[in-house]
Amino acid sequence: MTTMLPIGAGFVIGFLIGLTGMGGGALMTPFLFIVMKLEPAAAIGTDLAFAAITKIVGGTHHYRHGNVVPKQVAWMALGSLPASFTSAQLVLRLDPQIVENYLPLFLGAVLILIGLIIMAQALNLLHPRPSTELLWPQPLTMVFIGAVGGFLVGMTSIGGGTVIMAMLMIFFTIPINYLVGLDVLHGALLANVAALTYALAGRTEWSLVGLLLIGSIPGVWLGVHAISRIDRRIIRGVLAVLIIGAGINLLRNQ
Image (cartoon, rainbow, N blue to C red; front, side, top):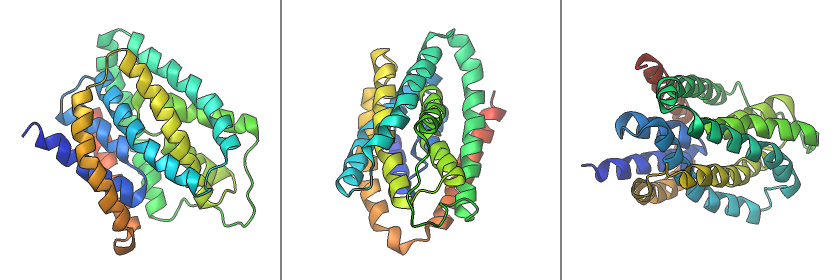
């Protein structure tokens, strides 16, 4: 049962990632914390290692298909990588009792925010601006947006990509294929750096990462092949409800 539980969770979360491109960390971290009973830093470190491995494949795929502008990834990483390292070090260096008491509250609030953003996308309230022109933000703006996402990833392992996508959708005009390519490749780079920080501190359960990947790899494959058969807006709506529910559960249990 202990083995099948993370494999099953990896499969379900992998399926949702393949189908919608989001929601992995927002479901995986609460699962590791609430169900698998990992302490907060270990849950974050384990989720980041899981995300780092899975996003490498997706990022390579988008790069090969020309959906990535390396210069924009570099500007964003200039803000996100130091921000994620700083917030991860903050979690790792704080008194364990403070982390145990207050990090789940912050995590719960971030989950609710992410759930609301995904719900807005499901209801078509948040979507890329229609335009044939590719208009990127100024470099310093990309650095700032990256820093916001990086801080969230380093501290909670969730929300960085979703928040970055939302900010780019609301304030700038970028075609959806470039948005997704940026999100996946930058997310792979960010997750790897953040995961390494936690791994070097001994806060990663590698055996659990392996079990999660056993489930997630076929789950992602199935999700990708089910895209044309399932209304993704409905799935995103269900995903948003699950994430908001996980956030509320964390807040109630503290």
